[in-house]
Image (cartoon, rainbow, N blue to C red; front, top):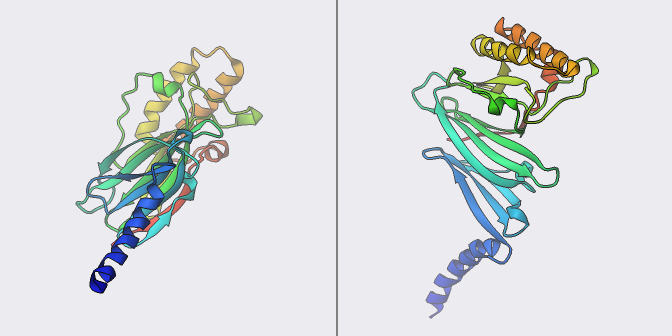
Length: 249
């Protein structure tokens, strides 16, 4: 009997440890993962309060990282793509996790990107919102190792406040996955296409202030077709927040 007690006590303790945090009375756990990737995200959500995230962690083969920035948000959806962003033959990840801030009523996206050759990954948080780009018939060719990020806002050009909304043609940024993490880059072939579309919108814009904003956006796109960086206003409008670097073995 003492042997059985010694055997079952650790088992009961471990069972209690896992069952208690996910008691159906107040919370439940969810695991977000991508097949064949050496890490996953676990989130503990309130059963009520629209499923707000109480705790969030990213687990790799070597470390456990707490994602404080996810806490208080609501998980909506996720999808991913696999690309060849470095020189090895292993596919790299671009993972797009959709979130909502219930306090501010804003949408956000958490991006998880990796480079398999150096076994490094990055977690980025960005604001999102519906814009006019969502309703245009676009057929833009995008290189596999480039992320197209549509800002929900226009830059604040010449003291004009930002515009946002589903009828606004906001600024579009191209992001490359580099050994130092995702970075803003100019991809001329993409900005040539964006410039053409933007000029068509300008031709039909009646609001003089908004038209001026669009003209400034086109000027920035023109710089980027030449491989240069955009204006200071456009860079300040680029609100990517890197919240975590991680690695695995």
